[in-house]
Image 1 (cartoon, rainbow, N blue to C red):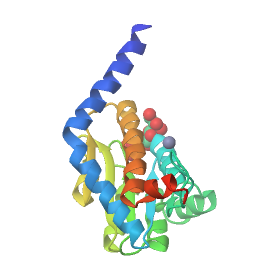
Image 2: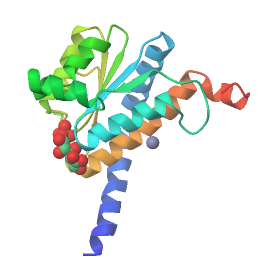
Image 3: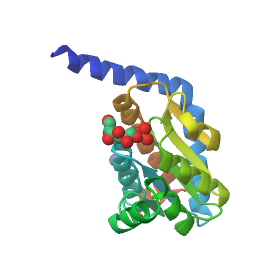
Amino acid sequence: MKSKIARALQESALAKQATADILEDSIWRAAEQMAQSLREGGKLLFCGNGGSAADAQHLAAEFVVRFTYDRRPLAAMSLTTDTSILTAAGNDYSFAQIFSRQVRALGGPGDVLVAISTSGNSDNVVEAAHAAKELGMTVISLTGVPGGRLAEVSDVLLNVPSSVTARIQEIHITIGHIWCDLVQEMLGLEEDARDGRG
Ligand SMILES: O=C(CO)[C@@H](O)[C@H](O)[C@H](O)[C@H](O)COP(=O)(O)O
Ligand SMILES: [Zn+2]
């Protein structure tokens, strides 16, 4: 049973190495899209189910509050947190619309939707991505391989090379942390912080 520990850690490390080999350019392109949106007054919306809902909240918090050093707040929001909206949209319309309804209310041209789904096939996340495209937003998707239905609607697809949900999620949050680091640097905030303007 103890061998499970070493195996899980090794699987995670190997999947992360494969991600570095395959997805480095896409991770960079996604960060550029986010930085451009924030630079032009746009915002980042995050959504996902279960563990990916936690990732959505976690990453929105990093952008709004801080990551690694103090700097100005960045416009980001998770669509997974307002229980009144989630229950009303789910109850009055359908569970498939809990995120798309919020995208239509809050999103606009130039904003970015970060759609997080290990399968790429969760109806509510896929509908959110379609709503975002209708509004002229950029869709960045974090999925596993091959990317499911999200693959068809994504501007940048990060389909991490694993089919194990837990391993995929572990890489998603790592990519999210890398984005925080890159976006801050692309916006010149690292320099500000060094110069005491954080
Ligand atoms: O965290 C886990 C499994 O590690 C689960 O809560 C998982 O996120 C849920 O089953 C989700 O509903 C899966 O949806 P998705 O990633 O395929 O969109
Ligand atoms: Zn974090």
